[in-house]
Image (cartoon, rainbow, N blue to C red; front, side):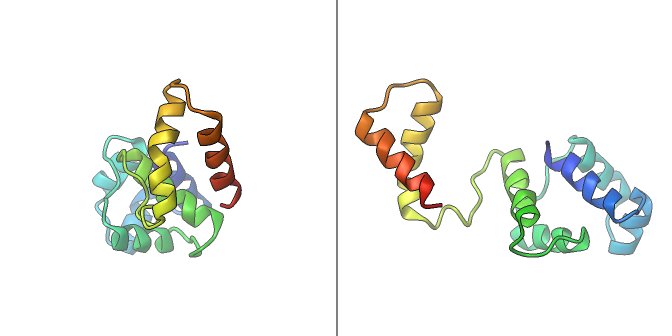
Amino acid sequence: MSFGEFVRELRARKRMKLREFCLNFGHDPSNWSKMERGDLPPTENRKTLEKWAEQLGLVKGTDEWYQFFDLAFQERGKIPSDLLTDEELVNALPLFFRTFRGKKASEEELNKMIELLRRR
C-alpha cells in the first residue's frame, strides 16, 4: 500500500469527501488529491505529518500512526528519523542492504542482524 492509498483510506474512514476534508482542515484540494493518487510526494516535515495524522484520526503511538510515517518516509526514499537515533540499528543498515541485494554475509553478521531484529 502506498502513502496516498493509506491517506485516502483514512479519510474515507472518517466518511469525508476530499473537498470536505480539505475545507475542514485548510488543505488545497488539488494538491491533496495529487498526494492521494501518488502524483505528489508527502512532505518531509515531521510536524506537518503529525498534524495530518491527527486530522486523519490517528492516535500517536498506535500501529497505524507508525504506518503513516513509515509510508511517508518510504515514498520519499528516506529512513524514518526516529530510527536514525538508534546507533546500533543504523550501523547494521549496510549489512541489511547488502543482504537484500543478494550479497553474501557471514553467518556471524546474519546472526547479529537476527538478534537485532528480535529485540525490536
